Image (cartoon, rainbow, N blue to C red):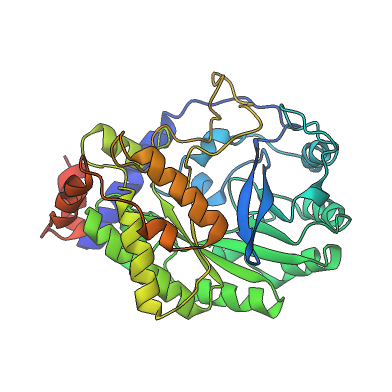
Length: 393
């Protein structure tokens, strides 16, 4: 076994060890996992967006390998149980009649939301996760709402298949955007640091081409600062990966700063003093670097992740009275003095696409120098050696 394989085995084993002690939770299969309503930048304006998260059986990658190093969305899935077509239909019907909202909205209708995000904490295009019959039912319903201008879904690249897209196309005449987790275009970082299980980037390129054949949009998710990287290494990788994604044909890129969810590898490393969530200051550097690298005046670039978004529905999971089980317990941050203001600017950027909003943030006298010092830290060890040193003991 070579060095790379040994390092990957250590990462895989630790993730599976963490998954093995993850508490099993019981959920109502007829109720959604989450509903959020917020503003979103689309076609040059800020519009209302509704995000609907189906209570599903979870990501197949998680079921087979333990999943990605930064993700614990499985905390909100039905593990070891089957979600029937009727369960999905019941969940969806609660959206149509508005009963999914714990805070009622008068005259609630999907027609009021130009952008609809439909997620399942996995790949919506994987028939093993969400059945074709459920997809048909949901998209047939979506087609009735002419106020919807775009539906955003998520899928791993390997499930972007002409057959399932044909099913959607036959039911829904509107625009669909598919978010694909690329994370990093560096093979070593993607597999050892993200544990993505995506050995060949040609699968991603093929997925983008297929989506464009259907006149659909392709959105790349770039996870910023996985485990085992320094702050500056993570910044450089996020910039290069974003540029690579645009050059591959992606229509938009969403930078997703790592947050801490229970029973994830990054959370374990954080508790062991081997990981810090990314600095918010770094997002300025990434967006600037992508613009410079693309020599562009305007890009569809988003800053994703959790930034204390308003949540209209509370948790439907056990033991969480105020925080949904899929939410992280720690997110990207600076210091307590400036994080709040920075987050407000991120939200403003996401509804204006105006990069000046990010650039015009005053340097914080408390933590800006700390961030600069963090960026100056170098690690001469290979990623494999870091993994041996941290997980091999």
